[in-house]
Image 1 (spheres, rainbow, N blue to C red):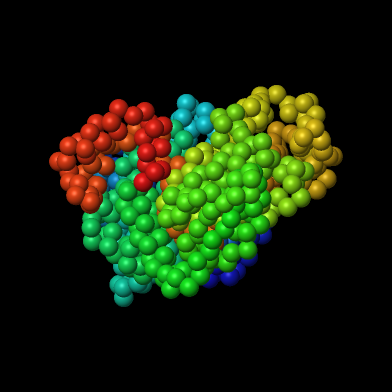
Image 2 (image 1 turned 45 degrees about the vertical axis):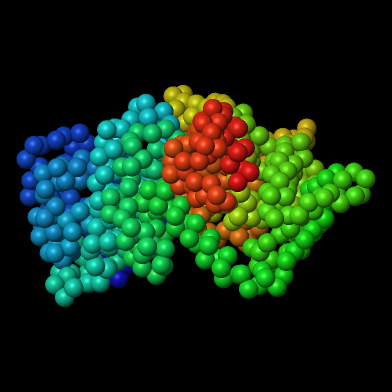
Length: 575
């Protein structure tokens, strides 16, 4: 969007801020200190002068985002200014006092009929999102920095409403009245469509991140992220249909629809996929003989040869016992379920060496898997296909995965606050460094990390020349980022990439992106809670002479209610 800035002014600004953000920090702090408070609340709402000043600041920063190096700019704004609490306080006051309708007329870069919140929200969202990458759990939940938990709940509701307006209510095209006007900041124009697009992305990404925090430790009800309009039957049918506004909302902001709605859409996508491959499946039925004594190896040798279309079709399995005799039985689906349950238990067992277990007994790829298996990457691709096949067929498997590994199925990078799901002790050490009051250089730490796999230790540089680069108070945040990135992303990059390649043969990214990591685990293993027997009873179809009031059926429901959660899950697997 650099064409929004006069070329001469653009050159002057880049020269002024080149390799030094101090000027930007001082400028923003001075402007907000003189204009806004981080905690002041005026019952009458912001004055016209405040509105005009904030509009000018936000217009300036909006252009800076596309003029200066983004990472450098965001680091300066997020960590060295009070812009997040100050701008939030302004947004909240405008919302509470209904000042938004009057906002646009005071901001010359904006058309007068543009939504009043569009510009400040477009600036606030990416800065706060960037800040959340390094904010730790203690700061977020206990110190309630930079925003209180009460304010976070209000923030979710305000941002959700704004995003829904952009996605569902406000047209995406620019009306003739939305012509941008000249202004005193040197801005030639401000494209309203460009601003809407940036706001949509910023809002959806920040709300996604806030939902991730809420999944770790709730600060608001999960339903606060939902839009009531996204629960209607019309919305669901439009989302299933595809190429509609509803389907675009599910792609960009799936959290706006409840989990049950998204499961309906996912189930419909699975059904459509199976229907589209039905003709191919009818011509090519695959049947494999698997020795129980070499379950994983036989399955790997045979199923790895299947194409993507073959994997989506029926697979029939017969087991061979220790005497080499094929076990009796016709696989109408039950034997395949038994096969899937047994092979996933064997393949993901930590004793096999492909996966490891955290202190919380959840699974993640073994960084040292190459020391155990020569073909470890091929096995990871195979295991990805297995998990994809289980989800494709609706087969629940008892595989509790680490949250940071489930992020790989969404092709997401992990950050510092994902580290507790892998190594809580390392997380505590990094927080100690982050909040250390003394001179960090006295600790004689360097930009290196020690890998320890199966007794083999090797030192690895986090940056070129890291062995000579001492950790200081000035670079400690970079060090913390690099350590977390190494453990969560870099060490298992090969394993994760191959696992994903196999998984996506059956489950495309756009399907899995509808769910967060906690919800993906529910799709894989089901809920840990007991079954809602009454709900199951209401949604059961009967045949063979049985009906809801049959004496034996009544006995069945009573027996199921008496089962433990584990036995209820075993019952479901038999269906």
